[in-house]
Image 1: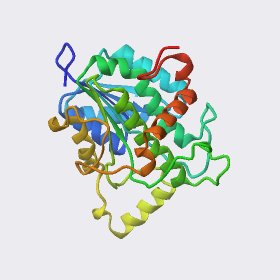
Image 2: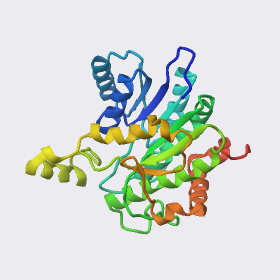
Image 3: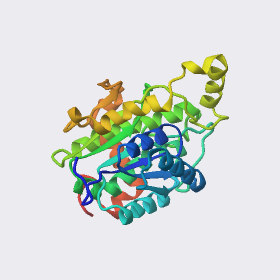
Length: 297
């Protein structure tokens, strides 16, 4: 990958103050990269930054605070990154969450969809100039492995009963649709984009009182030693970020360092394009500026 004038590669990681994101940042910092950490809570982000800085000796770590459910905050985040960095060699869209009940973002969008799909869609579009200027560069979207299909006629769950993992599954399938369409639009740019399932590991998805939080409490009581760590999951993600053999590889879905098949709907190019167009409208990109591969209004 290319470097900035001072010879450093620059990375940005969302969901960086705990769990998988923190493990990813720790590894990148240990390798000497300039790293931007995106966190929703300033105090937790500052604590994570201080801990990683002390552990790695890397003083070139930068905290960005943003609520990814709020598109105003995502836009402010993109502007802050532009103000701080002149290049971006690696974007890791890692942040993900789930909600035990249906709730709406400040823009009136179902929150799992807002955080898990629309936030990385919007952020990537707003940062793509920095990423292209840094080519060869990589975008890595952290996905999941759930057999799901997006209901294009009920993205807000107005017509169907909402369930935590159903909402999560639909929103995370958006990561695959986004990855495949983005790869098509970035052909020939020197920027690759892939999606990775990091495996099952202990996380705080949905909070300690959510369904997965209760699941992990039970497993820990039965024998927590057997639960994979965030650090082991991070190595699977970092393979896509660093592996020389993946230079030029784009539009793939990985798990355990191998490509795996995506759910049927995500393999449909027309469905990829349909979700992209919907996402443009839901984020205002169709009105405010051209998105990647689009035409200026």
